[in-house]
Length: 472
Ligand code: PHE
Image 1 (spheres, rainbow, N blue to C red):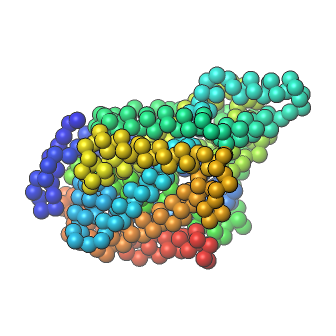
Image 2 (cartoon, helix red, strand yellow):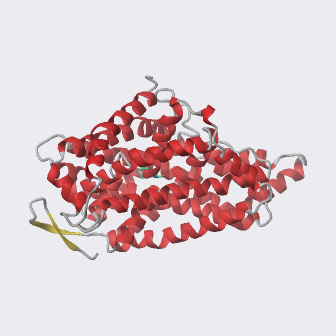
Image 3 (cartoon, rainbow, N blue to C red):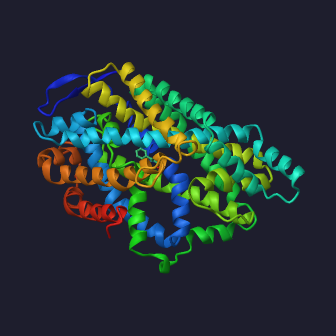
């Protein structure tokens, strides 16, 4: 693995640690982390349901005022300390308990990765189904027996049977975790950076092709209207909070993944510009995903639904009806699987660096241990949708419980902690140096950033948190 020297806060050379080899590589990796299932199924649906362009405007506000400052803060922590999440806090504020924020983030990464890899495994199964033309065949054979069976009914049954079964989802998720581990074994430059440099352009190309297809479908305009038409009557306090939560999840902020990617940036990377590019790409792709999904649904008179059923039931029903549906279905599921892969890589890397640098394992062993722990969480998550569905924690099955505690409790808390840490605790000179690249850049946004991190972000996050717990 190519190594480059890195320096401690006092300027002393510590040891050798990898960095991304190019600025574009750093952007591709961080954008890869941000762009994922959150963009492709969560964002379009939320926008459509929460007032279209009205929600989009609030979402853009959340990205700009919360997401970007937090992303800069995470890059700053990582790039200054050049260490794993816990190690970064320890290095920047030695002798305090702040490193617990990092240690808890690693736990959060494990929990998110546990259920996220289950859904990622589904995307592999659905890529396979698209490849083997399974949607068509399944609907056709059901209609032989019951001629008036609707495609969406058949595909709903197929999806439920698969998601609640025991072995197949676990096998696909295991394969997914193994692919992640394999990429991370290549290290930072030859693993993460190379994979991101290859996968992200493919992702953009697939998106562009799917978009052109959707926009040329008959009736596309109605779908676009559903997605974009501003309906301010639907905007409530709840909408604002939903937009903030979506911005955190989609931008991967609040749980340390971007601290790790920041730690691989070299000291000349402009963290403000990088954050802006990553946030821009993340938002653009979320919007493009909506442009792909809604015109297609409206064109075939299929009501867009929420959550997993949107991509695993609704869209396959659309593909079955669409000319060339075989091809478009295949492209779409490859797209979703790739998007999921680049996000899970960052989550696994957050675990790996912790075991490697804080616990002191070799990277290879850290990868094995992280993959194994993740796999255990993933198996329990997957089984909790089927055979173990009766075991509830606070009224939720394990899968939903993990989803709930991470996005409603740990991510907002992590984001608030990171924001307060950089806003109040981190030495001002370190912040200034990070923003201005040691006085080489103007760093005009230093003061707005500091105040966003000191007051605005923690206050808004606090509200999101209380709302998430149902306390307001
Ligand atoms: N941002 C990813 C998505 O949109 C999810 C994610 C969250 C990835 C947190 C890493 C850390 O799907």
